[in-house]
Length: 575
Image (cartoon, rainbow, N blue to C red; front, side, top):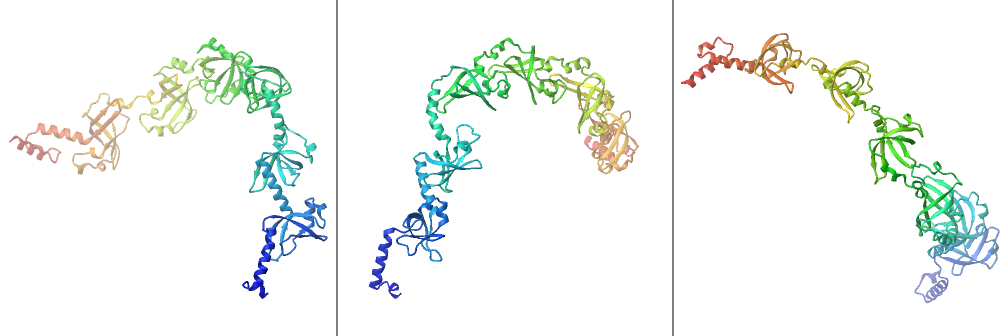
């Protein structure tokens, strides 16, 4: 062992040189594929000789058999393997024949994918979403989606199983090592040239005779032309009338003439139309006038209204808001039947958008106009409460099926409107006065307090600074609540308006029930606003006393503590 340890020894240096020259011949590296020669076979294992390795790698016989290499299990045969480790923890060489086969196969797949070349394979089994295809040359497994098996639906693919055929590589995932192939592209590529020749025969404006209905979809109908070409007629090109599905106007196997409206040579598609072979009914729209009544047939019922025909192909919209004057959230499905003929009034004609809007309610008398004739503004009538909310109620006037609006502020002159509203319930009878009618906006406003005598009329013949007698109803820290004699309304006298002298401005001087005189400080009849004051009355009376009595002593018997001082000030000014 000493000879290997001492590298300065000439013999050691010579040995190292010989060893390196031997290894360099085979370029042994982990992760590379190298050929191993079978030099020994047992019941379970195959031993390989690879020049440059210190020991013989071992392969499991079952691995070789599963790879289809049974015929190669012979002494002297060469098998490509992947060198995973030159030496593991046990000192053995690790190799894999199956991994070598996959890597070699993957390299060939990558090469075919980059060159856009087809590969040979066979469908070996079915799986979820498609099939498994085995690459014949390398045995690599690839995925064939169900949509890529053929250019038309196939119920049975048993005739394709295990048959060698061409496939196109459409996707490679180098990271995951997955490959996706297509049989459909191979088939389509053969047909593409033929289809291009067929499509080149058609031009926009051509008429195709006796095309046969092949199938339906949610967006249109497919026709077969002379057994050589399938064309699409879009839903909007089937008829000038509204069509929701092709089966409403066509049947499978039915034949019809088509007009070519588009030719796409890149996508190899031909678009056709049926309706353009007939006259456009919208060209007759000038025969119709706005605000006139016409007959229309219900063609479709929807949640938002109905589609009607003024004539075959000329479709109009009857919106749910135009069904009734009085009913809210009206349903056309409940009012009409399919193909029923009704009267409508044309409301709008938009030639650019090819749109016609009609109304059903305009064929009937506007009940709001009828109401205004029967109950003009300022009329008083009986009404029944139909519904109410937190701030208003809706009432039905006599036998008319209309709801009028009554706000809580129009319920009473005396109390709080919202409190008064709580006294009423659905079904109660109430007398109302018509305050406003807006037939165009379908609104009627009524009031209840307007049917009663307005207690504010008490101030009609009153004026500012006039003295009136009131009765004290209650007191609190803010002032007095009083009611004028002959009036049913209560008013507040603020604490600051009780007396001139702040020491006398005490609400507690009254307990309730007393009568006293007050002056009208502010009065606005149009705004129904009035302000009462005891302080103002004192000021008025004090001014009158000053003007009437001229000496200081004459004021001592008057109920004004400061009057003598005011008189003295008056005399001083005269001097």
